[in-house]
Image: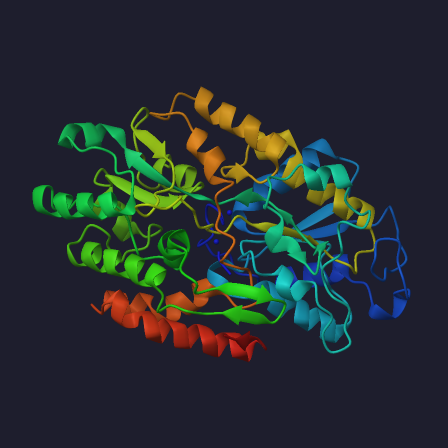
Length: 454
């Protein structure tokens, strides 16, 4: 799927890619299939290279700052940017647009940002005789040292058949965000297991109705609660094979817990990116399991909850009693270099800059960098701001606790959930009762995309 899923902050903010934008991309990035050689030094066929050619990059609205930072640091590189929705919510716009350019034989952008972690599954593959869109990065195009400096496991969604096809922008590991002032005011102890979390939610409903401990109104809900419960709903076991078992104990326990908390009002089915959420729950979010990017996108955001300085704390991912904690990953964002680029040197320079350079990842990026050296500096910078009520060390550990049993297939789990489960929850249906329907929806979509489903 997904889901740095931040997305990353703003993964749900959609910017239309209109005809004018497509025209720009066609004009600035076009290169025909006919000019491609039979082999290339980086492990894929390349067109004739021109180090003076400009590059076109596609970004969502929240990555505009990355483009600006690159331009400032590299004034000699000619670059044009096109804003699109970043394939947010599983819109699949990235893949759809590249298929159009494949048919036209031209128009591919040089670099593309996606909010999704499942794009390498298709972008690395040649289909209908057309060259795969994604350039192979670990055959010399990107330095080996750069790749090894990413947090362990960060490039797993980018790796297909043992080769790396994209760079992660940020990690979106799930932690437990909480309002320390409210906890102290109500006299509540911070939960240390999911069982304690449910018990606290039940107590909040009785003693402080209107306050909440989480939400289930967004498409990434399964990545927070079900992935973190080791629910085998998305077990990608091969390039075209997936295991789906939403009837497992791990899936049922997460669903049963949420049924209780949804019913008592402490985990409402409202998207955190809606005016309704801000109007109803500003000042009333006791805690919320959520990705690293929640800090800047939701809590420390004047346009959202705007939690006051010194109140927001962060705790480690919650385990189920008797188990080691694991976490889901809600987006994170990926950068792809086009195999059709006429200036691979500049394209690689851009992709490496926006994922590794302090000028963007430390100084401007709102989310936890996937590049480990930048992540260390980012944590220190965030802590030095004095905004948080606690240190941010739980984010570092959680970055290594993302459960590997939830894979990155072509199909979007977020799109499936949003279509199948979200409306049913809003309609009052039980999540436990919806598990078979969710499984059928996953199976059907996976089969449409050519997967063998177990």
